[in-house]
Amino acid sequence: NFRATFMLNARNIDVGTTQWELAPLSAGRFSFSSRSEAVGIAKLFRDERINERSEWQFVDGQVRPLHYTYSRVGGKRERDVSAQFDWDKAQLRYSLNAKFSTTPLIKGTLDKLVYVIALMNDLSHGVNDIGYQIADGGRTKTYQLKVVGEEQIDTVVGSLRTTLVERTQSGKSRLTRIWCAQALNFLPVRIEHIEEDGTLRFTLTALQGLTVK
Image 1 (tube, one colour):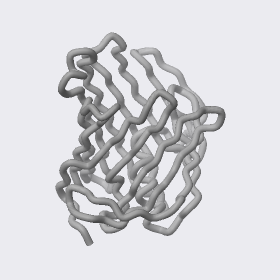
Image 2 (cartoon, helix red, strand yellow):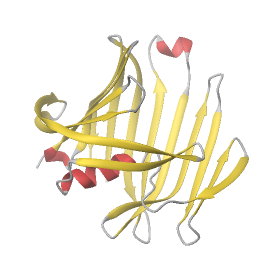
Image 3 (cartoon, rainbow, N blue to C red):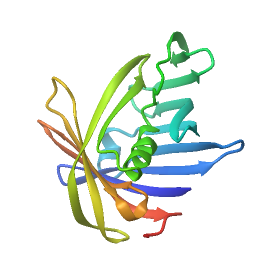
Image 4 (tube, rainbow, N blue to C red):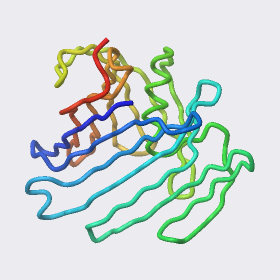
């Protein structure tokens, strides 16, 4: 288990913080949660708080989500989402602001949060070309990620060798780059979302529960 805190920076301005927490539950299950909020001047314009949580387990060495929730409050676009993964019936039960739907559940599908854990797991097993099916908004999207190299970077816990992973989106100019620290079980320590109008950067600022190997 661990707790990692990130600072979000856009156009050289700190605009928010995100905290990830991985914790064990009972019966071989785990919880992975994310809490984000605006800080500084950004809070004056968008005082939003976003909470996500994924309950999941390992099955045959792979991450299998069981239940996912997402809430966004404090802004003009409040949103409440849940997704129940019924693997026995191969059904995904999805709700958005209390409106419910059911869709077929494809083997290997992940939720939008727990794919971070799946990525850490796959990198630890030497996988370099990675494709995930992600349940998003009652639909399934494909995240295609590829290891493009290694890079030594300075972090809050020292200089670390990282595996650099990139994700491109078909038909879009957006690029996501993820630096995963090899000595921290491939925990992402820096993330960049690069778009035409600028870059949003996540930088690790605090870490508990993991020590450099």
